[in-house]
Length: 106
Image (cartoon, rainbow, N blue to C red; front, side, top):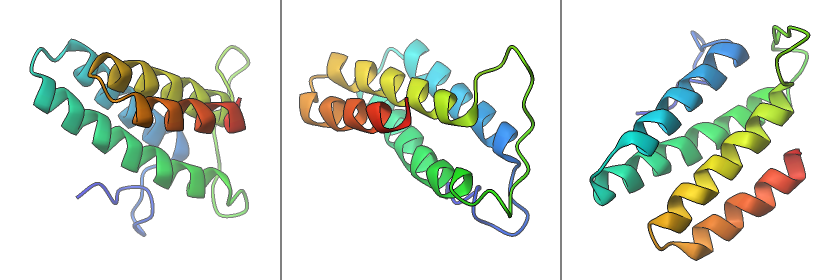
């Protein structure tokens, strides 16, 4: 379902990061805990795909503007947002995992 980043007609890295931010925003605004957790799960999958995309610099052109974060910084920030949301839902194990992943990228 969310294999958008590795498909041959994939989104660019920049657009993929935008999609992650949209999913995080939806999760942040969601009042239903089950739906919020499902959105967080989608974010986790997308971040995993994004990691593979960023680690393949020869096959991906990443647009970068001076004031924007690097893709690595954006991934780290997204992992921290994800960690905070799943922690609020009572999933401290998932939050800790996301924080560790954020540290690797930050």
